[in-house]
Image (tube, rainbow, N blue to C red; front, top):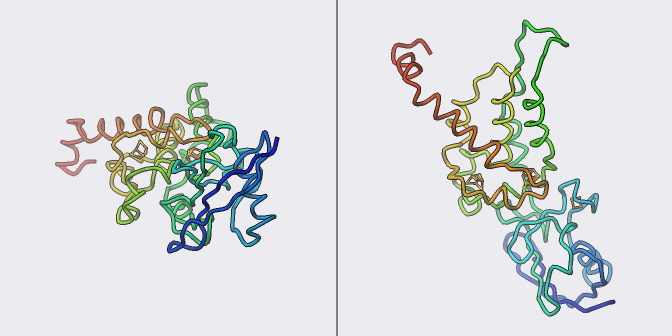
Length: 247
Ligand code: SF4
Ligand code: F3S
Ligand code: FES
């Protein structure tokens, strides 16, 4: 069955505006299908980023009726028959054009994290890990880098000034992954707090809510990392060691 749907789509750069279109939609389609039809029939210059159309490349992130989501995984059937659909670019990042943002903030934050630091005395093949220590990073590694968690987090969503000091949930999750890795020798607790802004996170869990991979970002990464930071900060032995210059 074909229906005609009202779409409000962001056009232009950061100073752009919503443009309204009446577009055909067919049964079983997702929002990205309708955006493609709009591109093919009425707005050939519409900039929209996508790649896999299977929820796996993380390219098609937008906000649909204000909610950060993947346009290729949002079924048209989730909207009421008369509901108008508004598609805007991710609000946290600068708009390049239409629905395409400059997400380089995320790549910059990824580069700042010191890489896996194994014990230099250990040879390849000497590592031994418990199954639980393998499963934890496997969950985090499901990340498709869609940046929806980064987009929704209130710490930077409306606070450009916090961006230099805050890495966002996706990259704090990476710090947590390495901090909890039994073969990583670097102490990441101090830098998590001082350089990556762990203290800004007040556990609102919005990041977890929008993650298309259903990664328990807050419960399995951010809260354990906070606990480790607190253990170090309030450990009386560490406190005394720091006072007398031993740690
Ligand atoms: Fe996207 Fe989830 Fe990865 Fe965040 S953690 S970038 S929401 S897949
Ligand atoms: Fe932001 Fe997630 Fe913390 S949304 S405040 S990083 S729990
Ligand atoms: Fe790849 Fe949507 S097009 S996740």
